[in-house]
Length: 162
Image 1 (cartoon, rainbow, N blue to C red):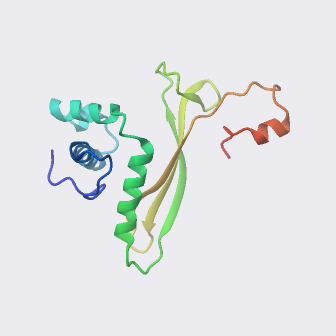
Image 2: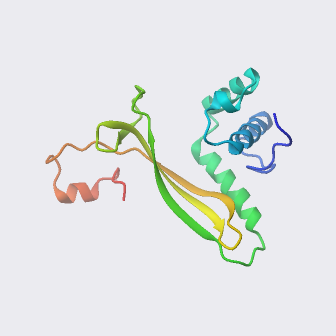
């Protein structure tokens, strides 16, 4: 692994397992250097790639735990900062239409499948310094058949995006 693995999450305890915490830091630090590439392209050593897959398949490793740890690291970076911080929001479509996975919802015009990720990024506007991801909500769009729901039922549905 490249260098000390402390930048994404600091040295905090995340999963209650030192090896998992170290693997998370090492894997995410490497991915952060080139977020546009695939895991095999960034984790070129077999042990790093297998370790990354094992990390992501571990039941202790949850989206919520990772986001909370990263948010805490962002708040530490901002401790004592007196200037303006912008919280920028954007929704990204994670299109996995080529995969056969039950947990995916509809994306796009309803013919694709995937998820929506709504991201909140903290940025210092004067320097354009990106502090990090303050939050991320992953949403599975439920396919509701046309005409099968009343307007009120649509508004009341828990799975509604808004």
